[in-house]
Length: 409
Ligand SMILES: Cc1cc2nc3c(=O)[nH]c(=O)nc-3n(C[C@H](O)[C@H](O)[C@H](O)COP(=O)(O)OP(=O)(O)OC[C@H]3O[C@@H](n4cnc5c(N)ncnc54)[C@H](O)[C@@H]3O)c2cc1C
Image (cartoon, rainbow, N blue to C red; front, side, top):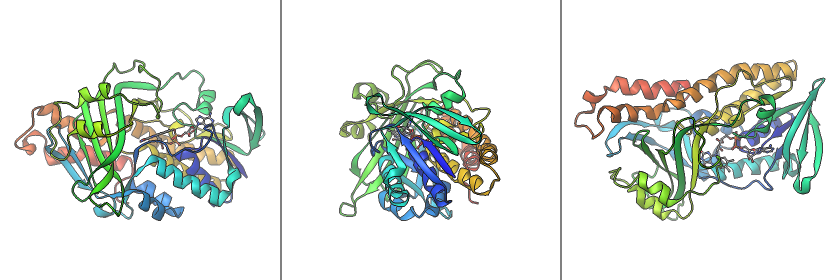
């Protein structure tokens, strides 16, 4: 069996590794000229780390990233609203790992080249369209200088991100991603170690939110961490078009990001404006998603990762869910009687689960606990219990965790 994969991102490369482990031949088409280690911080939840561990990548991942010990949700004044241990520190079998997205992509790329050979990833080739007939799929791909050619296999997996061409061919009337009016600025820079160097904090509700977590430790400099930050703020009307098209590599501007943090946050561990100013280059990304689809699999063609279920970046689920998709797809391909049956079973298993997360993220995900408290006590509180009881706060955070299968299994 041979699978064609459109897109060499985290979803596409993880799928390549899983399918190879099941004895399936793979050809990945990535439109970028090379697999570049782009992006800033990303979180891998324990259920996704478990799947990467099954591919033998836990050690490499742990070396690149940070095993997050604790997560703190606070209001904009730095008062703790919820705090909890994560991963192994919370009694789970696998850690939560905060890592530079580029480093994660780099280690997946290295593993694909080592295990499948350098020819398995064809960079500089963009999937333009596809056809399927009698149990086989073929893609038209375009390369530099307008070269066009075809490739064929037994199935096609569209892992080509939020602007997926495969999805657009399946659902030509869908239109662009939906913006909720929130802009996300994100960057990373060296910063003095906070607490144990393994703590993540999210402060402020949906009006303006500040995220802070370490993603890399240098043993020679224990007092410093490569630290990821993000600011999310409402800059537009939900449902309108963002000023600039969503592009993960678009540079952000200090003049646009700083007004949302100045004179707003009072955090004892960092002044947000200071870390933003200290970061040379950072990025903007409008908070976009798409409505859940009625179907992912059509014959021997299916969707995976952001192509299937782009979601707002709250709750650390974007890359984690792409990895769970990859595992599920491999399991069904290995056991079903036909490709079509496998893709159908994968669709049934994964589409509903991820749709729930897409919708929960629209409500703020677990970070909704901060919104709840800030809405009731915008100027802070003396007794948190009187503002929102422990049970009420737990229901928000744990409800989300069980939805995304973070809860202990
Ligand atoms: C450059 C970049 C930087 C990112 N940075 C961050 C970050 O800092 N933090 C974060 O939380 N998330 C980030 N993300 C998103 C995150 O990686 C995804 O949400 C998640 O990992 C799911 O991955 P995916 O493989 O489904 O999609 P993606 O990561 O978007 O990968 C899709 C891949 O498909 C390729 N592609 C697109 N169209 C075609 C086509 N027609 N033919 C062939 N190839 C195609 C793209 O070049 C890309 O490599 C970033 C994504 C990208 C592309």
